[in-house]
Image (cartoon, rainbow, N blue to C red; front, side):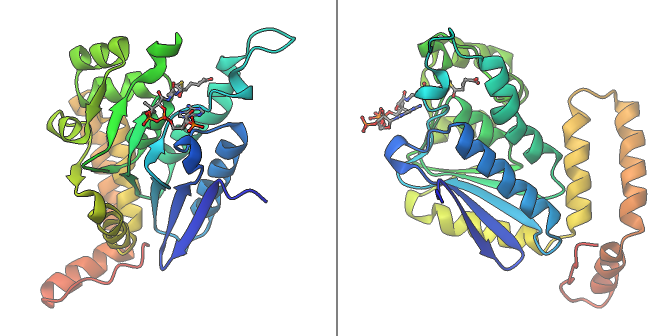
Length: 262
Ligand code: T3D
């Protein structure tokens, strides 16, 4: 049994670790199948209320493993449309559609698909020494794993185009300055801070956090009126939750709320 995806269960949340440090956690189809399985398992387990994604060693993820999956064989070139659609993009879809808040701790270089996996997450922290790189152009590919979408929405089109076309790496500080990620953390403090944040989210109003994901998923494309309608509908759902009742009770009683995620 390979452990290239390590699942570390904690009280109320799971840490998912990309674990192929000798290749800077470059991913192949098998590894992505196991990552999708780990996300699905957490999704179905009601005791899990948040996820943390990170990498082992000095890299976060160097993108697609440039090995057998993408090497031309006797039958011709690899089918990258199928590879991306079946594996890389399913990870992005799972994270975005998840009912769970997903934190990403970018512990080192995030290249190619690695950047897409990170930016698919809800809150991205990066170690000071981490770098983000649209490596695709260097091997004659186009951005995938959501990179063209996420970058356009986070850093704007001018920067997104240059990042994709030049393939230059940017520092974690630059990524934070440009609004691509939430925060830069000193290397030695990254995992502890990301774990604390994930544990905090795991004690939050899980259903409301899930609804926030639904709001932000469409906020960039919706008209204001459509977004107001959706906010009203999801606020209606939140208003009927036990967590809302508890939140208001706790406020009135001047104590911290104990959310159960319902
Ligand atoms: O269908 C589809 O969607 C296709 C897939 C597309 C998505 C993609 O992700 S395409 C982009 C694929 N990734 C890359 O092109 C990045 C390749 N890696 C690099 O450019 C560099 O490794 C980094 C800039 C990320 C880091 O550089 P550095 O100097 O810190 O480390 P290194 O020495 O290059 O790498 C360390 C080891 O990891 C090295 O192995 P070795 O020599 O010690 O045995 C290197 O070969 C290995 N490694 C790094 N990236 C990959 C990899 N092995 C396989 N695949 C990789 N992507």
